[in-house]
Length: 286
Image 1 (cartoon, rainbow, N blue to C red):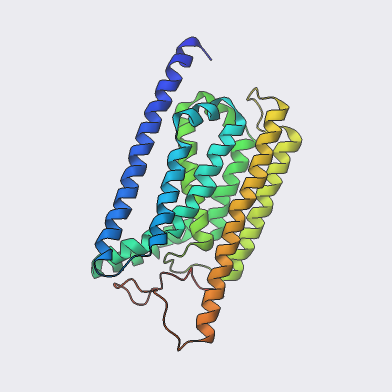
Image 2: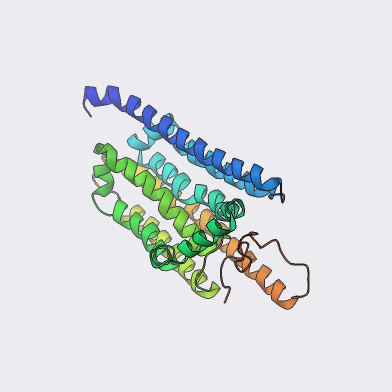
């Protein structure tokens, strides 16, 4: 790295952090405004708000300038940033059911249009568990087992694109597998659980490949550094995936309980704008 780039890299990272924090703050404020608006008619679960706040804070931590600088210099800290952006932040954001909150705040006509949009072919393809897994896990293979990661260290726009990809692909995968928000035409429970287990195996295999063969290549990192990064990816990734398994199983148990006791008190599953759409049920639990 040249003296010029060494001088300006922290400044560029500081600007990136400021922009990221501003966008995250706007996202959080929009959610809070929706909670305040709907709370006047029907209370919004406090723990959903807490989850969304935790997700936003996790994103914010990933963009702390010191962490960004460390991630640029050390593969281990890059892996920490990757885990925060692509695996842990999406858990809070998705389980906070922002789509349900949006449906509650929209007028009936707007809510119906949104539901129709969620049922369009492009959205159905992107949010299918198999496609979401390919974008998420497949993207990791492409990043770490090709020269792409080394290229991102010297190409700022590529690094920013990868951060965005981590967030979007991780959120899509979490939502496709176990998201409690409305999802017309979502595949059944068995397929989603099967895709999740295949993704878990693929993620674990990637961690072992990184450890065994010293990927990613071309970074100048020592073998011990690469080994530690692979181990962090392997074990901390397992934790995030275990949360998805637990969420999917709990959702299945709730549906089974409703099926066994159809005359019991109904769950809070309506948006108020489209009564045919259940918003606390993550799809057809077949």
